[in-house]
Image 1 (cartoon, rainbow, N blue to C red):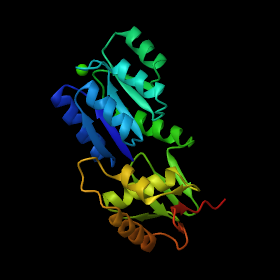
Image 2: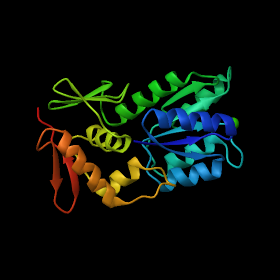
Image 3: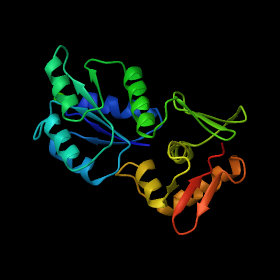
Image 4: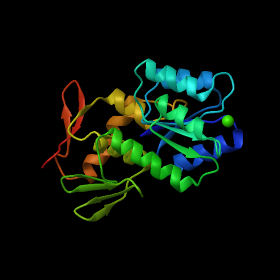
Length: 220
Ligand code: CA
């Protein structure tokens, strides 16, 4: 899962990026409205954390432009304290949730998880696929109750597949959602991660769909 953090205040941007990264996501950061708009318009993100008070283009305008262009990724806006009309304007512009500054990182992460799972049509914080469960609250993966040790990239690949269980996910799609923009992206490494995951997971769980990508079998 890949997140865009938009915040012009450098210290807060760094804290946000670090907190979100530590929670297991790939993170890109934009420091002004123009960069934010461009990145959200051209890259694939599973959610965006969007500060509203931004230089060059304000957050509401950025959001309106994304929505007008059909960009549907979940957006969590950060608003100033006691500025209720900013919240209303943000939600009307297409925000999915808001958080008032200052906030606790734990609350931001909980709201982020909720947005991502709702976007995938999941009601519960724990995703299940046959004998495999993934708890999005603590990134814990179990197979028949037994905890699995995964590297951060293996986790991101599995988490993306589990959020999209039953769907065909292309290699390119996985690359876009497990790496930040500045990362040296190599789609061959996706194959390596899939290979390692297959060794750790029950046989047959990750199917290869020839010429298209991968699909997580979704046994009822
Ligand atoms: Ca700001």
